[in-house]
Length: 477
Image (cartoon, rainbow, N blue to C red; front, side, top):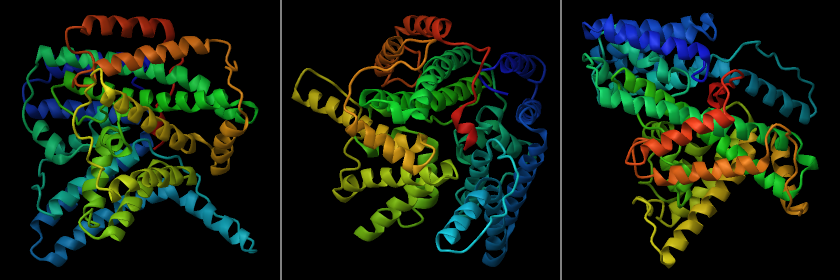
């Protein structure tokens, strides 16, 4: 079931009505309804993987209790590593086995040995990377005594399988969401209204920006060998807005839907394309994943406390692993590696925290410098996105090479149903509205919310369609 589908448009009001008017007597009835709704929501993709979700939930629930009850460090470590190994084992089998098997076979063939890999014919369970990380953070926090184990199975199950965040995040923490599901929620009209506005803005990002940009980005990337420099640059820009509109749109819808049920989810995006350097970009992009790797991988490895070599090592580890988390393809690994290279000069010069303050622009030289920094960071990001989008590393390299070789700057038309100029104007209007909202928590809040909401509705009517809804990009991760 997709957020941008008619099925979800029917599903959400039904659950909302039952939640507030039928099952609103106690916290337990509210949570029970949300679990049933979440399991139904997940089973709409493939009901067979529902058993995997339930097993993963029970595993971390049980091992968490055993870790807390453990009378010896040996016992605690046993249950801790059991959870880690089983969780990562499932993730490895479903997501990475075929990749490693094929890569090892290619290596042997290159060395002169004949090898035919044994590949598994399995479908990647939607959301497995997200709910696995939910459980891992929970177990790790219990092991290091940051939180207490949850003994109410219904409450813990809702934390893991809550449908707005189940298949594409944000990646929640037990310290943030569990306390909310353990108390009865009361309806707040103002928060619900904010939720509806956030859902609308998320749909604009997905249906208008992402899906329209995808049409052009796909046409350009699929035919890059016949495209000129300007079209290739546009292709990279289109994909940058496609993936941002797609994923941040999903996150906005998830946060908005959750507000309808009185639950607050972690913010996942904070206008990343207005970043003044790569370090700031990663504080604003996919925040829940970036902070997860920081807290559960980067800091345990030593973070930035060691010498220069340790800083470099840890930086490359966290970015490469982050790239690999996104998919079983060397293009994702290279994408992560490129971002590590971008980040390295900032780290070595101790300037990776220079841009922690809000973006302020006035009519002076410093404002010009800020704008140039934003454009430069966006350009670097687009270059890296080429590797993320390309099918192979060779395709990515040739794509970038043609930008500098085929120096022809005119728009080539590959898509008949929409004019490039209309899309560029729509992107510009979208950027201006995002810029106007950059210091606000809610996407459509403030005195000009009616104007923004009017733009959103008009944009959906002009560009969007729900009859041919497209899957969200991050479902594959």
